[in-house]
Image (cartoon, rainbow, N blue to C red; front, top):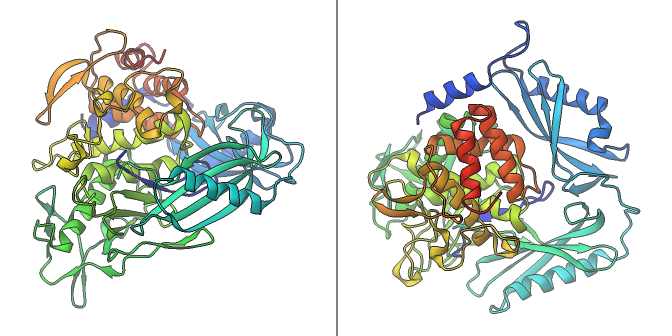
Length: 550
């Protein structure tokens, strides 16, 4: 996925009410306010024309200059005709990190306002670097080796591009270096390094493999239905009803990277079956993991379409593809926005089993949704929010699947965890600190944590907003919704949590959104959906205060 608007990198899980009710509430809260002649649903092209007109009329509101160009990333049209058009920005042709913004338009297409990742002028004195690209590559590979100092890496490559960094204080010319290599087992490692193009100082760095992690007999979800395609010699594990999503065997191979340009191997073998009954439910049958992967993709697609009206991960009706049995004892799964695909390792068999559980799929594919919308930068507090977004929606996908073999709960990766990890799950949303590393409560240093642990604050918020505080059993699991301020929080349910977080993500959040910004975005979303001073809006405020975000 993209931790910044102009950089596409992959996402991973590393060990580290009803649709009708929701639609009715949304339609009521966003009832038309314009004249009867105003269309209640503009097309994407019409919304973009309205937004472009607004940009031309209000350049000072966004500090746009003649040296800058904009490109549409995403469009949301509300039932009442209000429009929200998200843009990325370049300066003299260079991507601007933090240059993204969302233009909000009234039902009649008039300008209503904008949300920006950063405020102020994004220009820099010069777009000519003092530091060479070769030197930036060297610094990038040093950072990758340092981050994996306990391992002997091979095949390390780097590719640098000039950007304008407006995310870290005063805008400056910078090199963004994408580095990649392989560990001793031949599995991929990758890191993005941001370097001052004038001084050579490191500005920031982050992992670019964002962790987490007919009918078929699956490993984790029992016997599940599958839509397949009949071919000349049997059936193919390909689903035309969900954008052509398909699953194939990676044959335990990894991707080939040359000069940091990775050639993503499509599955060498698309899974086929003679009788349209797939897998045996046993890990030794290679088709079993394929059943889980295809099923998880189906459930994630259906959740976003049926609950949020999103037609595919990018909103364009396009399906992804799955690769199972990737790498050698690979303890990870990841979404890669470059290939628009999901990749699953088999796990090492000691700490993790095959990473094909439904909440893992929902988590990883939600990185793709974040990349296509808010583009939350994968470092600092915004990185924690990026990870939390995937945990939240991965959990809601698991509840949506309503599978008795894998009941919904607020644990992340509970099915893939083996005894060797010493924990029952990778993360615990009711009380994130149960894993010994995640933050329950916001503090000024939370952005310095690994994003999988800083995500705990938003995960904690999400649990409290949906379920409330106190002890209860959910999905057969004992939960304990603690608070940081000793308050008592009353939950509003999972459906409303999902509606609020999705609208906040797709309409109000930007690449630089931090926890304070997430509070503001979710309050705006709750006000849109349920009304200002509504029970839901008050619950959002209370849940954020309960995790020390005031």
